Image 1 (cartoon, rainbow, N blue to C red):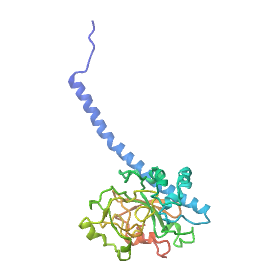
Image 2 (cartoon, rainbow, N blue to C red; image 1 turned 135 degrees about the vertical axis):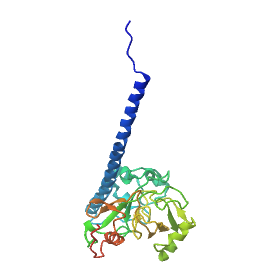
Image 3 (tube, rainbow, N blue to C red; image 1 turned 90 degrees about the horizontal axis):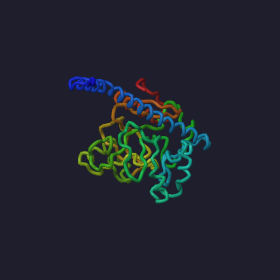
Image 4 (cartoon, rainbow, N blue to C red; image 1 turned 60 degrees about the horizontal axis):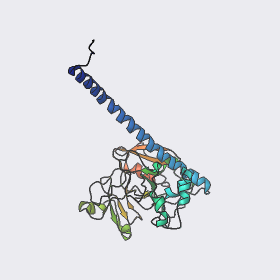
Length: 294
């Protein structure tokens, strides 16, 4: 009877070693491909949102949605019908506050277009679908009635309408300015400055970790930002009761994607973009020319 040939232990270990080596070489390529896909998806998301703004304006005599209304609904909520989310939009009771039980089911809905895949945190609160995209509050503010293109004299292609940021992680301790911020009272808004949050942060007081908790919420640091801090600033954002404050966009690396008024989207480098150019790009009517770093 013929004996079957078989691997010796040495041969088996050799084959396993070759496979492990090949796998180790292959994995970085897979990781890079996934990173590139996530980057492209994040840029595509923000472009879809900006294009939905144009569709909204076309249907509303040139008006853009308000950044936040009296019931605290966001511009994102008003854009739903123009993002193939008409059924969800129709389920929302806009005549009631966002916190009303009648809006609980809609509020929990997770919308993939509002989530940047590069952010590993997918939700902030169990009762809300989160977002990674905040509107520039120089064009989108409480009960704003901004018009295309009249209210963008600097040019739609020179003005940031929306940008991607990192969500909060729910922590109420001062651990990471990319995730937590300083929450003060509405009455504190008049005196807030770029350095206001530093002392609170140092003492870990008045800390909130709910940035971008709900796409339905249009209040400051939920649906809007103002860019009064430089990109990825080491100082904490400050919200005064959701009515305003100081803030910026934040990322895990130096790349941050923004959507411009003309419907385009692009990445900006937090280290290379000057604060001056950053502020010029946010103001739709300052008459200033963007720097060469743009």
